[in-house]
Image (tube, rainbow, N blue to C red; front, side, top):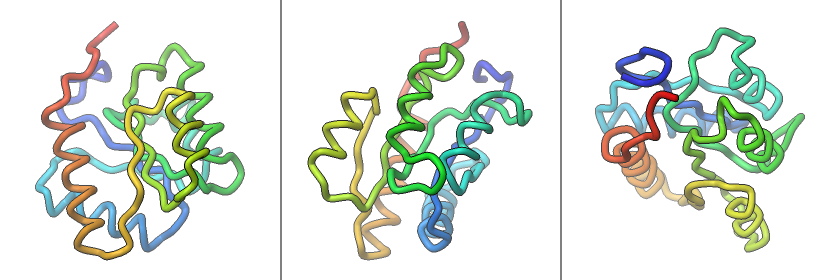
Length: 145
């Protein structure tokens, strides 16, 4: 059980590309993970969901794209880490960016992992499935405050 009192806390997927959204959700389901997947399609929507004002439970992990409309992924990460309610939530950057400066900035802002999206579907599905298994089943979250 998590700090929301949920047995299977959600995953928050922050992704503006509908194809990548569908592939990510499909890959998580293929790994037989029972956690619901909430989707924010831009950075502003993600921050609203994480604020608690939307009535959304805090996620177990955030899968965050960098190139987002309204508020970019690095700013979303900055705000997640600045808020006492969300600063301990694991954030995995899941991006197509090849830029070393994006990777460095992500780690400097406190991401837990930086994963480049593989182009091929099977590699993408495998990577997302491994991420889901690790962050939802293997990793021990910080617990209730």
